Amino acid sequence: MSFIVVSPLTRIAEMAVRHRARDMVTLLSEGHDFHRPGVITPERHLVLRMHDIGCSTAGNMIGPQEAQVEKLIGFARAWNGETPLLIHCWMGVSRSPAAALIAALAIAPETDEKELALRLRKASPHASPNQRIVALGDALLQRGGRLTAAVKLIGRGVDADGDAPFVLPLTASGDAHG
Image 1 (cartoon, rainbow, N blue to C red):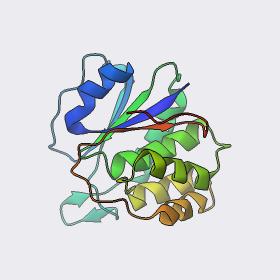
Image 2 (cartoon, rainbow, N blue to C red):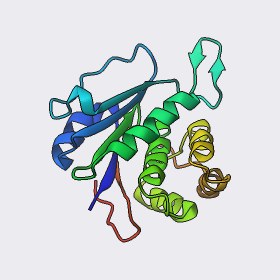
Image 3 (tube, rainbow, N blue to C red):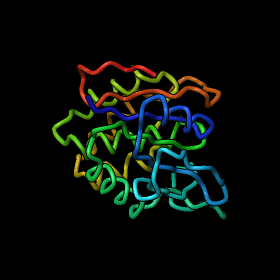
Image 4 (cartoon, one colour):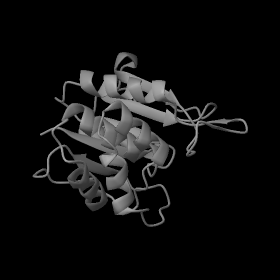
């Protein structure tokens, strides 16, 4: 079964090896350097540079942009699903859970948004998906506001220290193991 692994930056190598991931999405602000795990080739690695903010710009910070979410959707649709998709941001709490929701809907458009959001909450009590990424994905995937509403329904996650990777199954019957 295909699934998405959501991870903080500090655990990407461990998660890539543990879950045998070969495809990865990075959501970090400009200047946050990192080392891509050796099991991920440059061709199967999408890097999206953005700050974790809820608007397009704020001072010198650049928030999530529509073009970036379009790239995420295209990358997810090109993923073959034979190995897990690894998505990470700095703490694995906001940008990467939002990206995981969008990737899941891009891959399986028949998925119910509320059921997916509840599955996310079950997999991760600390996930607080970035509202701007969610709204952009909702619009680009033509979900009619249902994804945004579903994420608001699950609310903000509990406080986290950024060291809690999780697995988001792509189907309701999948089990979430970390």
